[in-house]
Image (cartoon, rainbow, N blue to C red; front, side, top):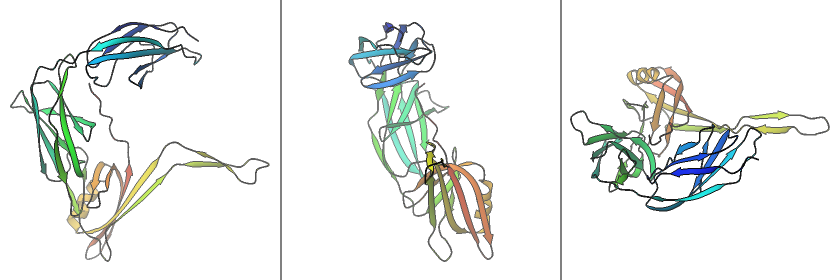
Length: 289
């Protein structure tokens, strides 16, 4: 195994920059407050992804060599100082099945958190240097938001939280980035339906001497959503135009799906019965720049 690295520096920023020296490194791990982040290269410098509060922290680093062997942990302490100097405030309105968040901030970077989780970065309005906005199209039910302003040295300040509720009387579907919502209200002869199919692909292999096959299960989840409604011709045409695009679907039951609309099946007489197949996809990873 390689020897323990030598930690050469930890900045006092709320997102500290950590540097070290090591022999034979092909990978490294950094640990602060019980959380471990990986460096998948020979780089010997890493900026912590989360914002840390004021106070003393313990930083640990270890490295892995070409043979997959880990060094002992190296450890040091550092003092974090968060020195925000600007003001920030958040307001929110519900409009067109979404939550419009407006941020008044003296910080150049402003991030939006929903129910404690980072969901996006606010965009600066052209007419003002201190006005930013973000639209949460996936809002459904009651949510609590706050904005975090960040300066060039990673000093940060959080706004007071605000809560808003988005309720629907029927289903809506639209393209992910800027949806022009298509209303899905009824189904002929029955209630609108949402059939969910989730599976992990499995390969069954039979071996001589075994009565039953051995299953090898993939760790990749596949999720399909089949929606059935009855609509008019114009709505059916609008749905067909969404085929192949990443869409958001949400409804009165609280179901929320983000994925690719892979199939639109229409059966037409006086009205149009439609079957929509959405393949659920991984959400975009949002991170602090």
